[in-house]
Length: 460
Image (spheres, rainbow, N blue to C red):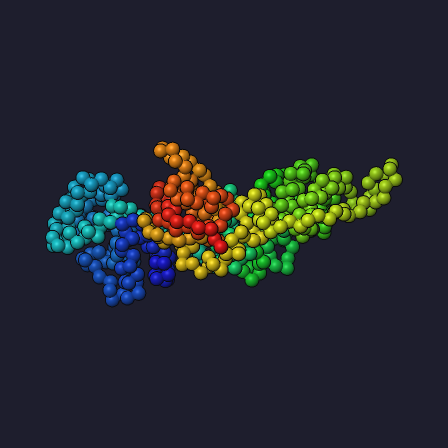
């Protein structure tokens, strides 16, 4: 929000926001923004401060500013200034009181009035909470600028990189996929014809094995594919075998072609089931039918691996040349089955979502889980809808049952704490895959946001 109001015009603005967006200095942000947009508001408590604060429109921004003010306006030596820095870092009241007396006395001795000396101390005091030094702010600011540039100009490539960096953290992956959806980037299940090991940018009208041209932007990409090694129960060795074979001889034309060309002995029943359930073989058939024929598929693979089309299977038996596999009829997998398999093997839903039928209802609500986590403060009330993804029952010291649950919507997830009274009234709703709405109170503890449930009902 502050960055939108600021509308940065150079790297110094970004560095300043990095430094000021912290407990204590944060109260200076509105003034920084006002002065940037209206230079006539810029003023200095003392003319000697202009050399120090000119870059930040007269607002004390960095820990360095405090040290230079102490040196220039209070007559501190660099050693004394470093002692002040350490005192601010430790935040010990008695030490800060002694530093205040010494600093204010120095200001007065060097020409400031008592009133201005006290005013200057009041501007410095917030940095005792958490002042940021300029070198750190510049480093973080540069990274922020670079990543923002990449996200704005090469969104698919950037988001694929973020997904790869967060591989293994299912909750983070879910939130990033939701962000991709908001950005208009399609995230697709893995594919034996398009996926590499990690998350892969899919280029429109080009072979997936060709190198990525980093000059290309959004319109040149059709989406991001999950990587083959992101599939649970699927070995890295088999994934490499698939990728190398695809590079060697091109895309797999059919299920039969895939089975004939992949000779890896680790392509067993478990790994084949993982490929089918995750959607990696979708272009070759329907998941339910392939799963019902898994033994037939496995046998065909063993008998034909490495055999060119037309080669003899069992010459001694007088059998004919290799033909494509024929699958027996079977019921198609239901949408709920597909979603459950994706959740099991990829950690989240991709081809759809159990909340899809409630999408319009949830979109019409004032709050979603992402906004609750980012915007609401301790004790505020919120109403959110979502699906229960996890439910962990415990027993209180008084012997009563309660539960810690995870609730997720299209924007992210949040922990829900359900105390005995509410749990006893609604225990049937706190089971995985149940879609519910919760009214509760926000709690911030150890840097985590949770929702204390007070009222619960099923979504309908």
